[in-house]
Length: 339
Ligand SMILES: NC(=O)c1ccc[n+]([C@@H]2O[C@H](COP(=O)([O-])OP(=O)(O)OC[C@H]3O[C@@H](n4cnc5c(N)ncnc54)[C@H](OP(=O)(O)O)[C@@H]3O)[C@@H](O)[C@H]2O)c1
Image 1 (cartoon, rainbow, N blue to C red):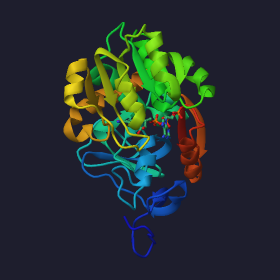
Image 2 (cartoon, helix red, strand yellow; image 1 turned 90 degrees about the vertical axis):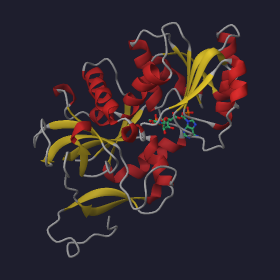
Image 3 (cartoon, protein in one colour; image 1 turned 45 degrees about the vertical axis):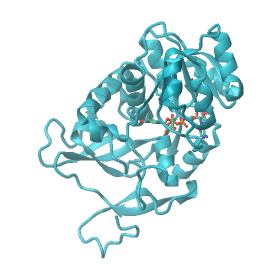
């Protein structure tokens, strides 16, 4: 992508507003620019974006710790209107209201998406900011609970970062699936009430979660730990796994060095270690993705799951959204209103 496009170097191509990361760094590197509108290739559609979800993966890409290669436009989940339909696309038409999981570039007025990862919006979600937050946290929650951790009714689960976007939907999904209420952690107990409203039974600060969880489970520990934090929190989390317990990593938000026990330790303790990456799965098993997007749309459209939108920022204030996200004061989900 040309970082400074102009009409003379792009004859015939319309320009759109987008938030561009031209160099890795803090929120200030998110810069509103005029860039060429993308056009859909075979099997793709282009969308006029109404809402784009803000996810921690966007922050990781911005700091150079993800898959984004500068210059790039961040943003992986959007809702909007189909603008153009590429060759070979069936079942989607211009003007249709949809949500999509994209390969990035969502903080923009126009984005392209694979038709297979573009889903019609239920009537009641059209024009709602929540429509821009349907896929990243929900897809993660559905896969973590069922395919990765394989949580059974009656099992106990501890999730770190309980009041964030992921915690918000996993708490509700656990309740919906009839699982036991979760244990969660937060950096400040002011966030605990928000997490409890979304399905967490007990919420602890990081400093004492291990002793609190062992006390709450009569010394047995938990069956599952869902951990995006990593580092020392992950190391301590292995110690609270019950026999046959599973620890699932889906991020290393702390950016601390990984501290993982060796296989002998895990064998002796009869515990396991698993991982999930929504960014990598589409390359390895694309057929698994669309069903999870359809299920997420159905659950959100039916009002079973609320993705917990707490702030809506204009596109031009994407940097403020990232700043608040990283300050760890916010709860729930942030959205950019684009057009
Ligand atoms: N693998 C996947 O496919 C996948 C998909 C979606 C998200 N994720 C990961 O899941 C995590 C949560 O994502 P999200 O979009 O829900 O973000 P979010 O809403 O900001 O939630 C992140 C939570 O992590 C906690 N946290 C712990 N240590 C932190 C740190 N050093 N810096 C900032 N926050 C920290 C924060 O709560 P406290 O301040 O209360 O600790 C915050 O509520 C992220 O790490 C993201 O990369 C992974």
